[in-house]
Amino acid sequence: MSPRALITGVTGQDGAYLAQLLLSKGYEVFGLCARRGQDMLSRLRWLGIQDAVRYVEGDLLDLSSLCRALERSQAGEVYNLGAQSYVATSWEQPLLTSQVTGLGAMHMLEAVRLVNPRARFYQASSSEMFGRACQEPQDEQTPFYPRSPYGVAKLFAHWGTVNYRESHGLHASSGILFNHESPLRGLEFVTRKISDGVARIKLGRAPALQLGNLEATRDWGYAADYVEAMWLMLRQPQPGDYVVATGRAASVADFCRLAFGHVGLNYQDYVQVQEHLRRPAEVDRLRGNAARARAVLGWQPTTTLEALAGMMVEADLRRVAQESQ
Image 1 (tube, rainbow, N blue to C red):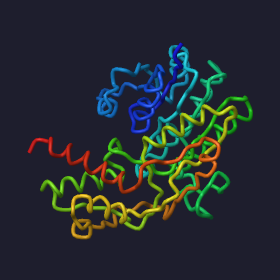
Image 2 (tube, rainbow, N blue to C red; image 1 turned 30 degrees about the vertical axis):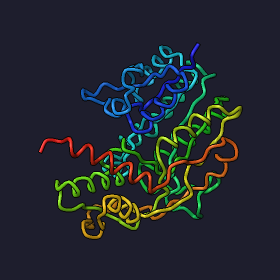
Image 3 (cartoon, rainbow, N blue to C red; image 1 turned 90 degrees about the vertical axis):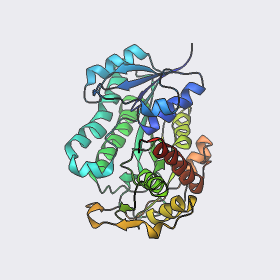
């Protein structure tokens, strides 16, 4: 029989790339979908795999639906990628973020414990848990200091995963992923906002791009590289937690320079800084140390930041050019 996997958040950036990876490895892939009355399959359609994924209805806030999804899929691997994942929105919707991103992970862990405790579980943790980090680069031993409701919710889910691993013996692992981007990133995220803005400016659809904090610095990688690390974690005899990162830090201004430079423009001629776009509590700088992932998983990133920025700009040039005038 082919291996089976259940992915929550399958319609998101990471879920789509993970589904593509697992399908290429011969898996039957089941995607948990909450019916929201709108087309959520655009990313899967972009990758050409929307018909290869088998969809099961369920919601991270409804334990009974998660149990049914596990029973229906008979999944031996469960990847919990579902979340309210936009950091800025978490200040506007802190309770929803806490419920979906934090408590939703606990619901999924409990469903695994009840239905199939032999299944291997992956939790999508986040570098935002480090927040105001006390050391650089950050690794698995770095103390956490989240600076947003999103980071707080992710930390709850992270420690919940550790607790289920230690209390119930689940093969439950967490990937502490640093920022990872792609042409499938949502427009609300700064890197995609930049690549889309570059395309619109280059094609004469917009005069300028408004951004907030250009000094914020992150460790940016390619999402399709990072989902391989998720899969590798569930290949290990023992579960654990792993930082997944490139080890390279770049500011928002640096990403602007690369993206605008890809089409021969100087970002300083087009980017307008708007103070109202700054976050209430900023995380100034994050850079990860993925030494454990390299040593244990044999994982390392393959896509440079330059290649990533160019890839995103090219995809948005095609998208914007196809829009009606």
